[in-house]
Image (cartoon, rainbow over all chains, first blue to last red; front, side):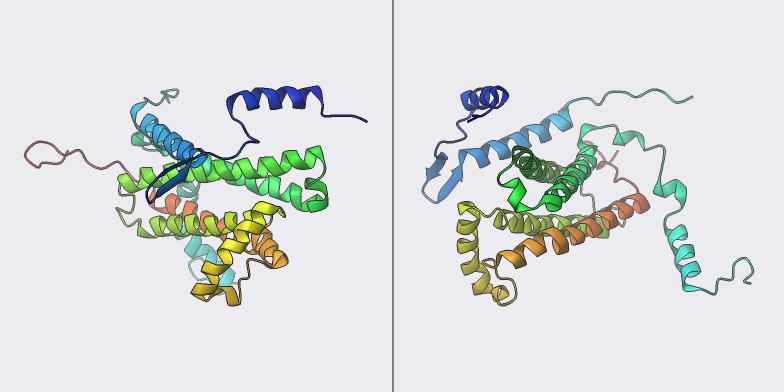
Length: 65
Length: 210
């Protein structure tokens, strides 16, 4: 009988150390407001990326002759 | 034989209209205005790139079928690739939408570009929804059970039955992807025709625009 590969176990351990992918989802709840932490993290990441896309300078390309 | 400027066939007329609307140098430009050199302008093409991965991984899943992607490691990999490319597709599309909304990208006779983009977003949500229904697991059962009440209340349930796996699967892999692809192609062609929208003019003190 063969179990999961070493690479799979390593990946599972590393990911599991950052985010518990097998546990119950966590929610933020206050009155009518209810959102999962995962969804909130994605929304925050989008807002941060949007702000960075406006703030960060774009690398200059090669000048055309 | 027709003389130059006199086209008798419908194919010739379509060609003339298409070339007049989108001459080759506008269809495939090799330069862009200087204001395009900003990170906020890259999210449209990132959305397109994610869409290509969604289509390619979906095609691989379709080749071998559910009996493969549920049990094999490679099948799990492509199943996950399909899911995460979809997540990135929406992630980039939403940032693209925010960018275009805040620069009022419908300016300069670009209303149709904005509308096709907005409809693409809505149809993409429907496509992803039928994808979640096609997972064949407890999550898809729960989503279908919850969604049927809302859709039945709207009357749509009479011909769009979310508890009918075969119907949802065909909507997911044939009808809706085709519609999304056609909308995206139309959207990109409209961007090519009108050009990339410039940033909003800066407002100076006293109400003058720069």
